[in-house]
Length: 345
Image (tube, rainbow, N blue to C red; front, side):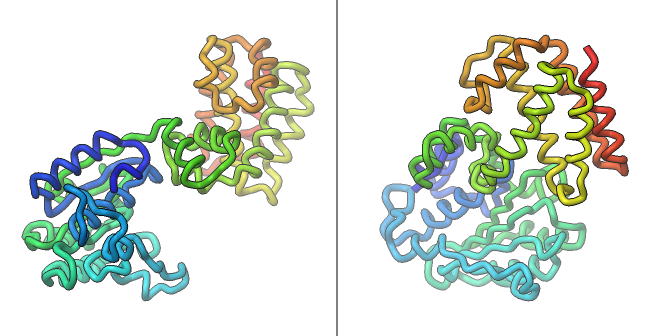
């Protein structure tokens, strides 16, 4: 049932209305950041249309049909052939495709076209979920258009994407768009506490750093995050409290150690997040707007020595470096330059 899903109450109301009126479109485009629950909403819609004991417009979430619809056995990443086919749930009328490598393939779209023309085997409607639909290339998009132009009455296509602009206009125009908003911090924290049985302190921190995405919260290694945060707090302490430029250059060298190559960009992101907290504290923002409230004392010490204008400049400088990472840039030289620039009053 939709009520068990976190956030996006407006979308729940829209989908319930479609179900109550019996007017679920043949093609829906679910747009929103990764991890906000697009696939979960798609599966709840499939349950509602195929439930054996519907409760009003929604699925009961208990019958054999509902239980099997959400039960997928995904092939391993190295099983290339299986990943090129429709991945069926435990229910024969609900399938999913996802990119096989870097793109969604023509063969996958042709499989959907063929299967969509069959009447439901067991349920009332067939559902085909296309994950990361923005990874359709021109050929696979054209193959999918054949199904979108003449959708079978008993089949529904649900395209999920975080980058709708990457889809061909002809694809977008044939789908009804449903836009998902980032989840509220409170919704993410409640989900982590109640559904995942996470301690409140950890749930609160993850909810803040997840930026509205339960998926991002669940994939975050909190121990690694805290280690990266400790290192970046040293940067801010050196900048604001001790003025130790030699320490800044040693930290820059540590960041660019080959063994820490994968941590470089996450550390910059953590540094920017900490500066945002310092800036917010300097401006007198309420505690609810501070991400790293568990290190509040350290952040307040730093904010007491940093003007709001200087904190704003730091954010601009960090963002500039993060943008430069998209091209070939000497990270060690760029990091040294960033820290020395931040050290200037």
